[in-house]
Image (cartoon, rainbow, N blue to C red; front, side):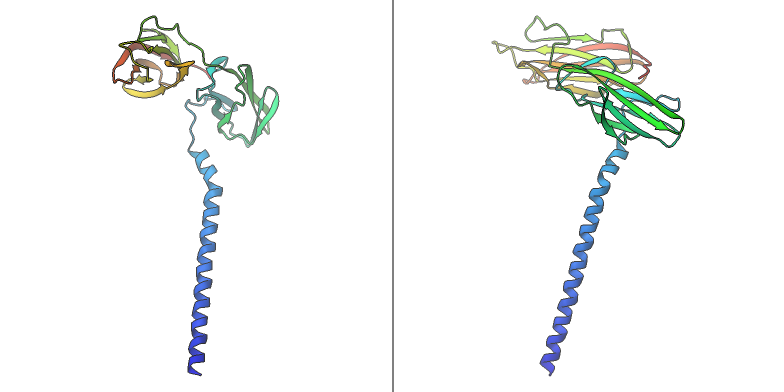
Length: 255
């Protein structure tokens, strides 16, 4: 009788332990599922477009791409980023070349532009609220990599064709450069191009053009309105670098 009672008690304890363990596993699965479900929303909330929204209500601001700009296919600007500003309850849709491309566009949006076929394409955001609809479009082209400046005549060589020194530029500011170092005696293969503005690194490019001895940079950078010191470095793998300096005054741009 005693052994039977001990066996029954042991079975009861094991059963309760198993049920408790199962409950903990179920709770862990629920927590993991909740975290996965909430993760996209958390990521979306932390994204901030690189420019400021227009001050007027019921407006759409495109930070990227720049309207009528041409980008290289290997650049990261193959997306549209910006703001929807509407104090009324609203919904927003995006259209690519007139075809519905996405619904439920958030007020801080980042969306793929959709095409890399060396053609001009138009993205349109349409917002609907109780007053009706309003919309804004932006057109851009993603082309095969092309020289944004003339190829340097020296080896190694470095050319910055945009901006020029003392230039008055719009916001965002475009920086275009080409560097090369052929495989000839005494030269070295080019590594990267870096852009520094007022002592802060804004970007770099590893982008080759056809062969790895030519690198190009053709990008837009959002900087505050005012006068800035721009430094562009062409880094060589042997540790040396070629440096170009520019002083640029940036004025407002209405995206």
